[in-house]
Length: 126
Image (cartoon, rainbow, N blue to C red; front, top):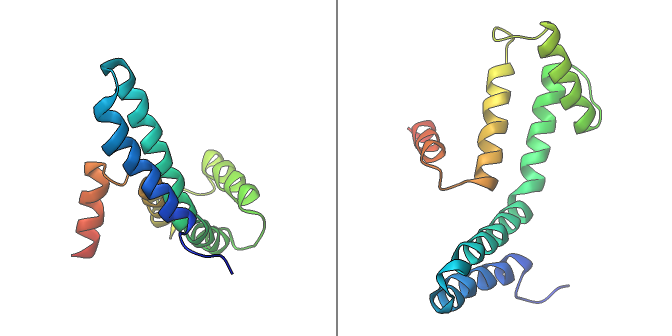
């Protein structure tokens, strides 16, 4: 139904325009803020592209781990409560895997160029 460009493509162009066209012409005290704006646009694009799938995967893991379904926020709250109370811990099957997967998913949106994230993804592929 919608024609090109896609929202992600538009955001890519805007971020590139800020980096390539605007930043070189800005006074030094404005460059930092322009980089923050371009990075925020990149983050929104990644969230649009990957967010729904990552949320669905997390919800599936949570439901399996806790043994029932429900809204993600409620399940996350329950997970925290159960970890805090000690009913779930480091030896609980699937807990560490879920926490690691959620952390990596968040980093893939927030900080995909973070060195530790890239190293973890590279080691997972090997």
